[in-house]
Image (cartoon, rainbow, N blue to C red; front, side):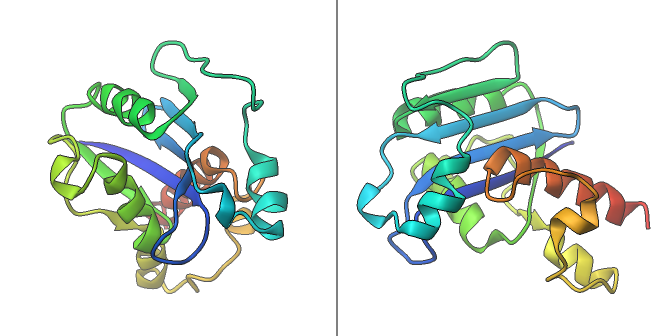
Length: 174
């Protein structure tokens, strides 16, 4: 079973939110990063602009740049869905981990249309490090940058996915 650690950035904590980016880091080090071009721009406020949009990896004019299984792509939801599905097919069984799953898992499933269209090798029960922290008697509200020891930018989905993986590894070693 391959564990993948993922994070999403989106247009707000509300039911009509739209996905801006998704970052995934697999246990074997392979990565997937996508920036969507069809998120709802009308939902972008100053905080999102300063903390999420300004932290996107790719230049707005870049369409895609990927090699091997370290995938970096920019496109609309359809392009992202097809590319992510291909990336996931490198693994026969996948266990999904995130930070706090409330929005991330729903948006992950939404990439594919709904939960029943997620590729079959993805285990249908997702896991989160918040629960793992609670089980290890660590305050789930702890600063992830401080806990992980990484010097990464917050609110970039690929950096956050890496942070989630490092936090998971640290927690499992306790």
